[in-house]
Amino acid sequence: MSFSNKLRILLQKTNIVLRTLQTRLRTSLCKLPNTKKVNTIFEQINVDLRNAMYTKEKCLLITIRGIKKELVELAKKAENNGKVTDEKAILTLRSMIKQRTMSAQIYKEQNRNDLEEIELKEIEIIKRYLPIEISDEELRAEIIKLIGTTKSVEGPGQTGILLKETIQKLDKKASRERISKMAKDLLNAYALQKRG
Image (cartoon, rainbow, N blue to C red; front, side):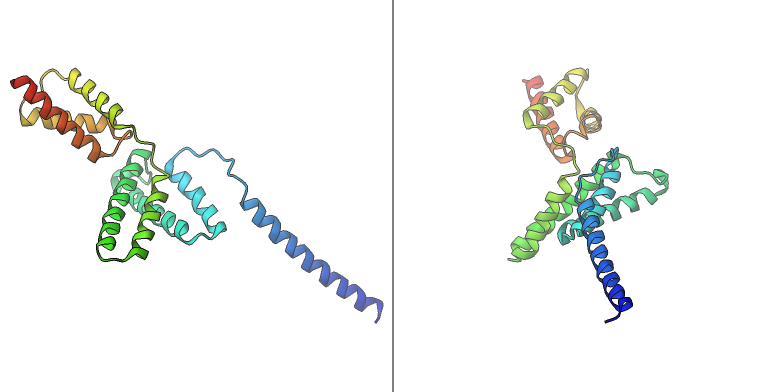
């Protein structure tokens, strides 16, 4: 075997080793935690989408792509000017959870445990992007404080105004359904106490 043939074979082996090292380096770098500071939910979803593409977790990737699609559609609406605030993102995420909860319940009724499990996994992934909700006791205290600051809570019109104000102030701390239910219960109790 001539010197040039030996050199060619050595170069080929070296190229193979270099490509292997590059691939390993690329995969190890994508496993490093993200050090870039993320300010919004939308930015966090973009970072997590990139990481999910590298890890190739199918359910995670599909769910994050679905979240991003919903938020991009929300940003395209004229009143949003191409931006998605965290408040609007939270409302969208809660809506997505509600849809998946209803789907999971339907799948459970139809004995489709495989599809129910997928919906429940997606719910858990979506919940990662929501702020931690306050407990029922804390929510009750916040609503009682708001009722106390309002001078009169009489009649359906005043109740509606107070309910809207309560939802606006506590929207990031708990879901609208929880706030609405507890506020209605407390307002009914307050009205009964006032009459009696």
